[in-house]
Length: 325
Ligand code: NAP
Ligand code: F7E
Image 1 (spheres, helix red, strand yellow):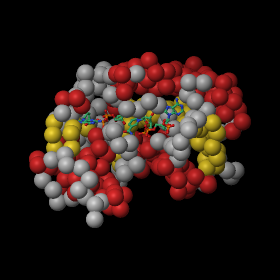
Image 2: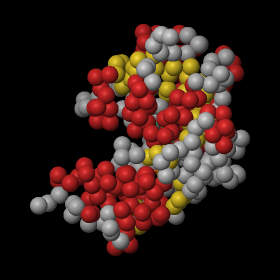
Image 3: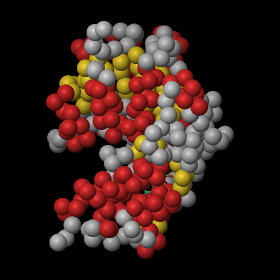
Image 4: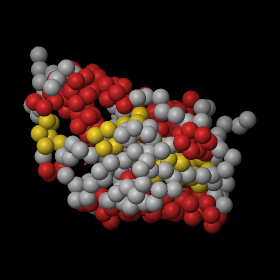
């Protein structure tokens, strides 16, 4: 069988790095789309950078995307690029819509015009459920977004389904619940906590300021979740899937376990700071991934407890060289 080619938008992000690793292992030619930057943004993929081909493009620019799809001739496209930080979606709502919503149409337009046989994966999100209408949330649960990010992701979800139904494109929407790792951006709460715990343990920071400790999320490991993305494109028919662990924990639970992993008492260091509250909050999310279990044969391998501990230990290792003597 000839080698398959995958094009990944957002390859420099957390998920892009794990997906690139997986696809290389599966024998793919991996091409990553990156946007022009004056600094090196390849930190998360530094270990595999020689095995990946890079093309320069931007979700804002239709001509660059169409030219890339035309030149690369991928069998599969994973559209992971987005403005993905929820608070920024309130301060930059229009840009978030351009990247996270219309960006999806731009990639789909490139697929439609170059070769509608290309398989397409859209990175949809549990943020679409927002103020939840049903618990646990599944593929059929109605959406009620609580941020411009959530609203933009719903557009991306429906335009993906629309291109499947209008043009017969093999287009799937993966509704993924929060997934984390040592490669998570430091502004997201889990990594902010693991980084903060490590800094406090090593004497580099005195306190950790956080927002709403009562929010609850269904947190899994990013390495497990990219496997579900790939499996979705290997199915006989395109469909949409919820990917989640089925367990939910509060930010406070994460904090408690993370400080305990470094033998620290969280209550001595955590300060609740209303600056980190959101204009509208998603209080509690928990997913029902039974369709993915059944049809994709997918299940998560890393538990919440192991995830928290791994993230703290990784930040301790990374920061130890900077600790005062
Ligand atoms: P991430 O770490 O924030 O990575 C986002 C990626 O998008 C980066 O590679 C970034 O490039 C790229 N990007 C942003 N704007 C772009 C533009 N205009 N043109 C081209 N590239 C652009 O996000 P992630 O956690 O890996 O998530 C991947 C995708 O899954 C996102 O679409 C996110 O919304 C979605 N999602 C994530 C989760 C989760 O829990 N992680 C859950 C559900 C859905 P730079 O490096 O240049 O900034
Ligand atoms: O917040 C609370 C905050 O920013 C989680 C993105 O990948 O997952 C992510 O979105 C919760 C919220 O992730 C702080 O209020 C408390 O309730 O880590 P987060 P998110 O908003 O759930 C979804 C699935 C995506 O698709 C997104 O792209 O934690 N929280 N204190 C805090 N959050 C942050 N960031 N910082 C705090 O200090």
